Amino acid sequence: NTTHFGFKEIPTDEKVDAVAQVFHSVAAKYDIMNDLMSGGVHRLWKMHTINQSGVRAGNKVLDIAGGTGDLTLRFSRIVGSTGQVILADINDSMLKVGRDKLANKGVVGNVKFAQANAEALPFADNTFDCITIAFGLRNVTDKDAALRSMYRVLKPGGRLLVLEFSKPESECLSTIYDQYSFRLLPFMGKIIANDSESYRYLAESIRMHPDQETLKGMMDSAGFERTSYQNLTGGIVALHKGFKY
Ligand code: SAM
Image (tube, rainbow, N blue to C red; front, side, top):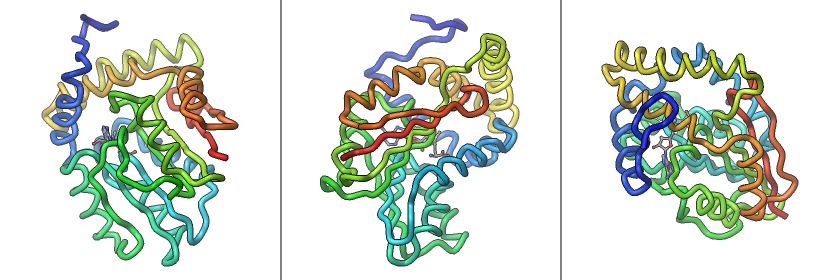
């Protein structure tokens, strides 16, 4: 099977290993690549997510696929000493980079780290006031199982925020974006991280991810209510929101 740009589609049963390999490989250079590839705009998308989270002092937050901890860092400052943030990620290389980065920034006390698969979260029912997953859901093999798992561990009244690449609103932007992600992105990955394959996978995973309406429907099916989304940067990224009542 090949996809739009002729790259080989990864079969589902190989996807877990492939994703693990990609993130072991990119972990050390992840933050610098993020800034370069997005021109720093990922910081604005993440700030917007924090602003939409409704998180307050004392809250319990779960940052799934938290990676190098950008959201966790900001949440830890908001929830304060009476709250808690758990950064969960399946990949120990990404967790290690995240743990070191947060320690260097002086974050101690209210952040815990957990190696966990989003599809089967190892937390009790009704635990979190807010759950975020930023640029993580597209890497998860069984997204429906992951959304159900998130719903289970969310408290009634709590909200889920999914920040993820999505479908650009205009054809023109879509064409430019395809050229960027399938040609420039692997090239930058090669030059900066000596790893074009991982960045080619990232581009491919963006294209394969469900579009805005499909993901909203999946959240509805998992039990979330009042689901909605906002397009950011012309739909290159979307922020989906859903509540549990
Ligand atoms: N949230 C961070 C950010 O926005 O910068 C990191 C995003 S990074 C692109 C994707 C992360 O998803 C990686 O750290 C990867 O290990 C993690 N991941 C992939 N599959 C996962 C799964 N099934 N469960 C939990 N985390 C997963």
